[in-house]
Length: 101
Image (cartoon, rainbow, N blue to C red):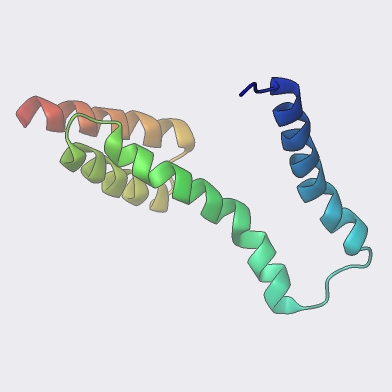
């Protein structure tokens, strides 16, 4: 059985292109449904969270260190810290926690 890589690449490109073009062709006027607008507004944030949160916990040697850094990072961001300070705080928390575990 021989596999042609170019067929796989062509199918992948067609599927990716279709997923991106269909909404543009089917939805031409502005959305008036408030629920649909709010749903589509939060989709990128949810997608990023679903990909990021498990990686935060699994990236450390101890899941406890990752979970603790996640909680402290959320608290620091909630209090108004920027992206760089939150990242530094989380790295420090993981470093200290894994040192004692």
